[in-house]
Length: 429
Image (cartoon, rainbow, N blue to C red):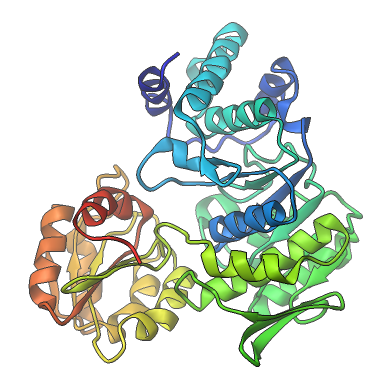
């Protein structure tokens, strides 16, 4: 199978598929020789920050001399972005070969019609196949949605289970409360596990996670206890289990990336069982960039794209907007998916922007721009509706003027529509 055929097959599959139960995924992997057991794994779950934490964690382990791979979702430009091997996007041929192996097995096993495999199941199985073939030392795996029924939940929590944070999302699938959602995410960790690393939680989430950990006898390291960080002399400083990593300069924009780095350092140390090279940590902190996460494109005007797609993500974006647009509030280009809490997403963003241009991403579940615009106007926004994302960006650039700024946010699918064109016109910083 070549890359074109592999992509056509992946794109033909059900994109919504969260099917309750893991029996089909386990059966497929067993028939493929259990590639998910070919190397130790670290499982990353949470509401926000999973992709950044996964990238940083894989890079930190590579700095310690390990061959590391990372599984990420969703992608922004191309399907192969979802798998990184030795710090690079998987080779086209290796990706196509892995998809081909999975497709052959799925066909042989007869999964079709009501029991057809989902897009995410195929991608996840192919990632395990490709990483096993590459002979990696460790695989850092980001969960797709939730945890309990996610296709990645075949790892028994991995050597380490990482919970980045918890807030309300996908309430139709994960539950209406933070406690229910935390339970779905922590379900990937086996009972009595002492391998947990828990990131930054607000008080309701902290109470929920603490109660679940106590009930299921889960232990590990938590921010605020074994993990701590602050601004120290010469830069950011992280302390984990008696080890200190001072003078860190985080190259990826956004205050939230410091939190992601902190969690990644703790997870790497938990996995290895010893402290990390301080110089290696500094190099990773300064060098790792995360496409689509407060990604800055300089020019006139400056354009920033961010994958914030839920209220907590928008709050994190809002906390960093003043850093990337000092003294110049930007014009926002926004599209969201129809199942999101749009009003809660807009609330932190609108006061920090001069205007909002609402559009519709190419995703079939993109919300009606007119409905989003009404909610934005209800909050006092100067709002324009431009249905085509490319024309919406042009309109925002016009409104911002050469000395202004533009922020594109609300949906990773909107970023997918626009990032390639922005990158072709101006370099990312």
